[in-house]
Structure formats: C-alpha cells, structure tokens
Length: 359
Length: 142
Image (cartoon, rainbow over all chains, first blue to last red; front, side, top):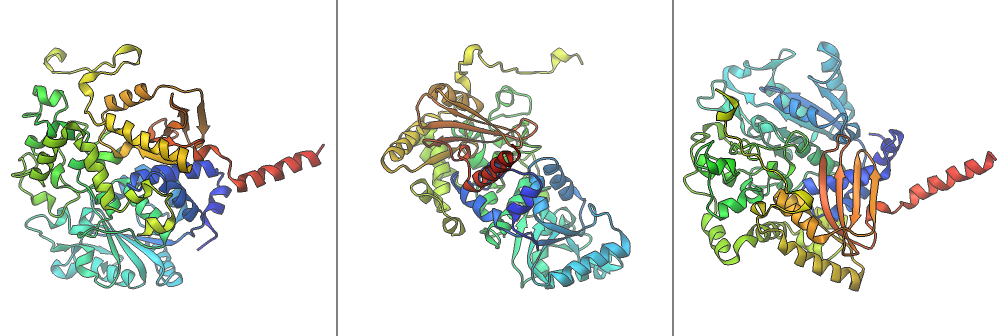
C-alpha cells in the first residue's frame, strides 16, 4: 500500500484533466450516469494501491492476451500502475522459486487485503493432476491463495463457469472458482476472452469504493453485464422492423440487417461488446457481420450450434408490442428504462454523489 | 475468382455534410426533447447534465444527423490530454458536443453536455495552486 493515487499519477506526469477525461470514459463504459465521472475521479484520486495476485489455471492465456492489449501505452495502463501486481506468471520477470517466493511474500504481507485474480478452470479429475504449478495442483494453490484474499475476481468464462475445458464430456472434471470457494466475495468476469476495459473497470470500482460492484444472479457486474447484446445493438432497429439477413452474403447481410436468423445469441447474452466494442473501439462481432456466440454465458460451447437461430428471442412479446405502439423511438426508450432500473435515472435530476453510485 | 464476383456494398457519405437518410434509425430526434428539458433545468437551477452518446443505440447516420441539426456555435475548444478532446459549442449556447480521443486518435467516448462551461475546461484549485508556485518561482528568478 502506498500514498493516494493522484500523487502516483502526478509523479508519472499525468495531468488532472487527463485523469478526469479517463474517468468520464470509464463511467461511460461502466454504464454509469454521465455525470458520475466527476464523483469517480474524486474518489479514485484518494484511493490507495492494493496488492493483486493473479493465478493462471487451466486456461489458454487468451484472457491475459486480451487484457495486455488494453493498457500500455493507452490510458488503461494507468490502472495497472494503480495496483501492485505481485504475481502473474506470464508477465512477471521472475521464474521458478523466486516467482513462488514473491507470491508467498505478497500473501503474507497483505494477508486479508489482497485481491486475487484467477483465470482458467480448476480440474478435479485424477486428484487434480491435469494442471499443476510448482508441483502443486491448482486446487491446492487456489484454496491457499483464497484463504487470505479480500475478494476474488474470476477472469474469463473458464474461471467463472468452467468454460471450454468444461465442455461436454469435460475430460478433466473442470469446475469454476465459485464451485470451490464459498466463503469469499467472488466477481465473475466471463467472456472468451473478457473485454479489457471490463477488467480495468472492476479494478477501478474496487479502488473507488473499496468493494466489488453490484452483481447479477451469475455473479457478474451489472454495470457491464446488466443488459443483453441485443438491447444495446446498433442493428436493433432492424430487428424491430423485421429486417433480417438470411445468409451471410444476401442483400440483408450487405445492408447490415439483424443477424438473429443466422444464429446470433445477442438476445440471451449479457455483455458490453455492443457499447465498448473491441480492439480499441474498432469494431465488434456483429459490426463485422457475424452473430454473437454468447461467450459470456455459462456452457456457451454446448448451447446447440453457433449458426442455429434461437428458438425464441428473449422477451419478444414485450418488446414487439412496445415497438408497435411507440414506433422507432422504442430503442431509446428501452435504453432509458434499463438505466432507470439501475437507479441511475435519479442522476438526471440531481448531481451524482459517491453515495448515489454505491447504492 | 476475380474481385468482381465478391459482392461488396460500398457506402459513401454524401458530400457537404448532408446525412444519408437510409441509415437513420429514428432514435435521434427524441434526444432533442431530452436536451430541451436539460437546457431548461440549466437556466432555472444551474444544474448541468450530459447525454452519453455511446450508451445509446445510434447509427453513424443518427450521430451525423444530431450534429448537423444542432449546428456549430461560436466556441470550439481543443484539449490535449492523452489524446485530443474537442469541446465544441453547438448553435444552441449551453449545449456542447464533447468528443474524447485516445493517443491513437480513436474516439473513446462522446457526450452532449449541457452546461455554461464544460467541467473539464475549468482549472482545478489544486492545479491553480501549482500554477501560483510556478509563477512565484519565475518571479524570484528575475
């Protein structure tokens, strides 16, 4: 733990306006009210750097790949300077004994206070022999590290739900973090891989409020996973108008119509791709002309085929009826209604304070 | 296979800042009513507000339409802080079109702000203190 964050940033030559601008963008990505950026900036400026230990288990390093693409040299790098990343096998210079020693030291010095990040599932088959580090099974390592953690972040679909290793017939007996650890707060950040800024957003929330964000019934932060891809999709108006692409090269596809009939899982998938996009905001699957695979939902690999249309859209009647009455404006109305659900609409009438955000 | 057999649909933006009507979703006009309310509140209570454009299902044509309809005002502010930010007053004073870019020039977020002066433009008292110290240092060297 070191001094307030703003001091660290000033030492690195980051101006206050840069920080404010960053917070405004972060608030936008976290689907907080636009005026929340100011409140976040005030709180984050005073935050202190927590110790973070990152354990990779049965994974493909795709999550790490995704997250490392987000920071240096972009502004997300700031967040990584704001935490003390004490153990990360892929990124750390140390190896072997020294690496393990660094982890034990960090766990001892910050007992009860460090944030534990896990990517990859944990195999239980053959007494856990399918995946070992430093001669110990993932199960042992997880239990040991979880004991002293303040909270755990399950990074990616494998750590959150078992992911691809758990796909039928699950040869290694893979399970998720929450299948094993029951006595610690766990936040799931699913996705294959997750969106980089979702990860930094959760860390920012932890820094800002000293707690984990509000979660849905699957343990995912509501700020990012509160709405479906479909509800935030820019092609949504075409769905409401009944304009669908029937194949990948027909007129509808070329006109950018809705990909529902080509198997898009957007209506049942909760993630932030439609608003944050990928590769630094360049594009995202639907904008590139391919339906959503649903990678942030449990067992997406076994969900019956990527190109098979959903048998029934989520909440079709409610949305269709509203569309018929209100016409094209319904997209905006739905968005505002969703925000209201989060209690954020209040902010439209009053200046947002830190207390409002914590509700 | 020759290139001609691959179907490509090229969309050209109409010249002169006009908006392509085919791309409009109909979601943009209601935002003007939202702005109307916000602007009224600014006058009565002095309270600022903002619309987060990246959080709404707007097509690129919708954004063009909004920008075109709101028009350009007298002030255009450019901020250099980890990439360029532009804070441009629209033809409706008090309504600002704010765009943040990162170092690579990509748009990271976009807002319509309703305020007399956008928050980001004002100098923070702590920064002014640093400025004061700097000025004193300059004077002591004279």
